[in-house]
Length: 329
Image (cartoon, rainbow, N blue to C red):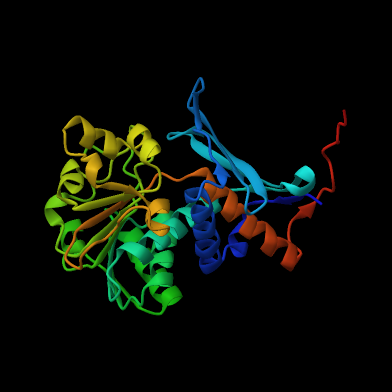
């Protein structure tokens, strides 16, 4: 059985707590050396890009990849394929537009669980789009959040975001008029913006960091994207990333900090290594911590498997049978 899952199928199948648990298991697996995750391919096209991200999960018995292509101006399409190693069976092909945002949020949830102070109850969100929503959902899944502030430049969008998330989460989500005011006194700050094409893409500044804060920054995933300034990297006393190599090579934020000499590799740890005790994350309640992610294939394959399992349970998607012919030698 191979399932085809379109965008309308996928979103209702994404349970945030299940995504957090399964992706965390995959990160443990990778940290212990039981996964094969080659460098992802970033290929230029005539009008944009084509990115390929494979992973083989040997403990979980899974393998798969995500491909996405397009351009910032014209839009991007995402596809995740999930295979079972046993029998080399293709389990599912799925639209991954929503799932990419959901797995990004889930990874932020994992980082928040291990890096935010245990009693953190106040959250600030800069951004009001899909990834701002999924990241806030994940933060609220791992912390008992009591108050949320949100800022984005578009008044109507941030008002809609606040109303939707207040109803969904059952807590007060309040709009504010500036990013600096939004983050004041917040114990967890989520920066999830789409600043492409804006004259000043910086949404969060290191000068606003306060003792004990965790900043989760997820928006700058290409070299031409920015959302946090270089002072954020310099002032952070601990920096945790989801891939040391990919963050340095692909995030415009990290590349700017490197070029200005404000990216100190000595204080950078990988999230998967923090999870298994190979590296330190937060070491004191007053420490200012930055989590910077660009996404990994492990996150995609594990998230895709969550969706596949739930689709089977609910009987969703189109079953196209075993359409890949087996060639024997």
